[in-house]
Each structure stands twice: as structure tokens, then as C-alpha cells.
Image 1: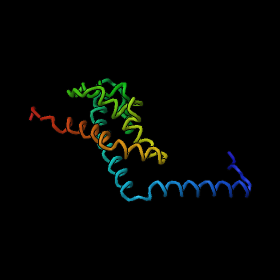
Image 2 (image 1 turned 120 degrees about the vertical axis):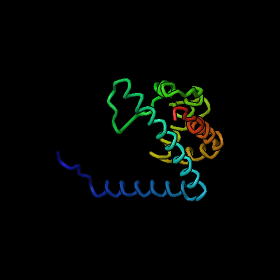
Image 3 (image 1 turned 135 degrees about the horizontal axis):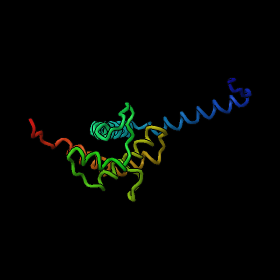
Image 4 (image 1 turned 60 degrees about the vertical axis):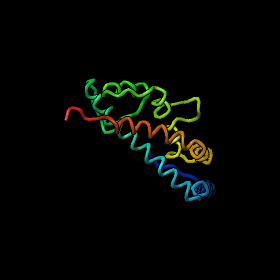
Length: 153
């Protein structure tokens, strides 16, 4: 397969588009408090997702499915996998955290996806406006995981 070719003028347009995107992203992240909030938000969600994937991997293994290094978080399985492990989280919480859509705005997972794969000012503003709410969902989930007592020990 041949490498695609573009004209010098098309290269100039492409480089200008890349520069414009760079400037837009830098403007979104110019405020250090915003950068810190986004880092805290993404890190906390990554913890929630990683903890859940420990449970999901065992759930999938017990169902006879091959467990790979890539596990997709899907709300059709989240309640079942957590129930399998003995947790009883409210479905509303799980949907706000891991779901695809919510009546309150974007779910925590969708906000994380959008800040990771194409940050824009609208998403940043939503995270700032809903900070207590979205961090509350993550904290509630992690508290539920953390508060489990190992009675078998």
C-alpha cells in the first residue's frame, strides 16, 4: 500500500489545523486548578474502574469466558459481576458511574472518556459544575468496596 500524498498547500492547512487544536487544548488547560481537578477526577475514576475489573475478570473466568488484558466495562454486566462478588450497590449509582447515559448529564465514565480522548471546554465546565456529584459517586463506590470486611480471614 502506498503512502498517501498531499500537496504543499494541504500540508500547510493540516499543520495550521494541528496548531489551532494545540492552542485550543492549551487554553482549556491554562488554569492550574482545572488541570489539578481533571487529574484528580481521572485518577479517581481509574481507581474505580481498576477495582471493578478485578471483580469482572473473576466473573468472566467463572462464566467460562477467556479473560484478556482488555476488559470492557459495560453496564449490562456491572450489576451482575458486583452481585457475584457479594456487593449490593444501587443500580442508580452504578449507572451514574459506569453507564452510557444519565438524565443528570453525562455519566462519570462518559466524562472521563471525553476528557481523555478529546478534551473540550464544555466537558471541563460540566466536571467543575458537577464536581461534588461525580466525586460523590466515585467515593460511594470506593467506600462500598473498602468497607467490605474479610470475614474468611
